[in-house]
Length: 620
Image 1 (tube, rainbow, N blue to C red):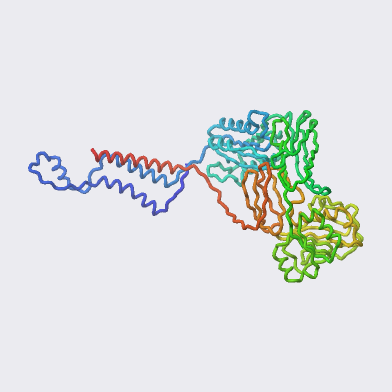
Image 2: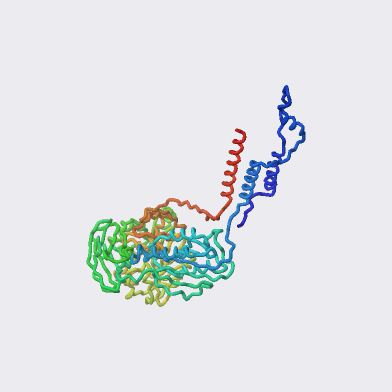
């Protein structure tokens, strides 16, 4: 039991004076009115009382007095805010970690694997003695402390029952770090609750891992923890899963969409099933799939004349884990970008921006380098209304408020530096995983002359030649700048004659311009962060989840926006705007078992009893 003082010293003086005042009221005699009577024989008792002429009378036993003093005592104790925290010696500490990843939704056991794990955990709570304490952690690829160390079985049961299934993957390392940090001395508590029993010294604890992952006891140093794995379920005899699903526009066939899926048979027997492809809920295609045990294979569909829509791939396979039998992808409508090209008439560059795919994506305005000095262009460059500036063998005096692509020139200022041109140059390394170079083949690229660039901090090297970095991209506040260190003239390179050049321009429009339309919307695994490229003229993005919850995100001066609430399966709808975002923060609430409320209730009950007795006595 512990107490919290809620009053100042002078307030306690006032409180201490109340009981003596109540007692004094019972010492005072009643003042009687004189009455004239013809005979005093019948009023003998009255005459005897009149003979007592003192101010104080002897205190008699009085139930009302004791009830009133009890009310004051209850109120005084309530003002001390009594609470309880166990002070007994802890005999046994245990940490229960329950896996609530997607695979725990399997129904090879009664109800589900997660429900079976929760039932085992509840049995462990029921087996606790009065001096045992337990902690509850739910984990998938993240750790969530549901209840810190406590011996309160009611709170432990509530924490276990509150664990619900997720669509996330399983990652044990973070959960182990969390459990170790909470169980060993010097921890940083994630559970701000005064009822939790804090770890002040090294006390051994047992860690119970309830999961279907087949983990061995971890070999990492867990301090005072002893890990024990409790398996849930058995290896599934049949399980077909969608490992990946995406859609993209066919660059060679206008109007045609290709949907790709990668499937795997995790079972120990061959499987035959149908795969359905749905567009906005209606069936548009299907295929029969035969897979051997352990086989991984691809599956593709072709869709004609589709501008936008939500695609759903569903496997009609009979297995115990249904959550991995469905996947979603989306195709967004084309969004017109504002692109300004500054060139003296580079024919291959302008031709690459006039392909049907580029025309559907961007509105291109071409100006000469001399027009950069006009007031109208300078105001436009500073307004942020242009999504992408492309500078061909020229550079402005000041870099615009937009994403930029410099070809054969270096950005103004001191952040980018360029060497003197040299040549010939030979490509020795290409960062093929970067979105700017996706599907771009530079294996037979010829460069007569070019310069190497030194990018600012945070930049990414894209192409390296024997003379240094030829192509790079780097962030600049909310924008990004890309530099290609060679001219596109016909006598300088053969790149403009190759198919990879218009693909590079399309990648530039999509990545630097912020377009999402020319390819299908990106797909993510549940629980992973969705990184979105946003056109520079937009400062906010609203994301609507499959559950119908809308979140508004501010770009905060960054070239990309990261959305992490991706737990639900389905299609997430993204809308861009310039609406301002108001953010508010709330403090964590701290909970404590309080007894003062019960004391005040007791005071009210006693006061009601005192009032009843008093009114009954007066009535009599």
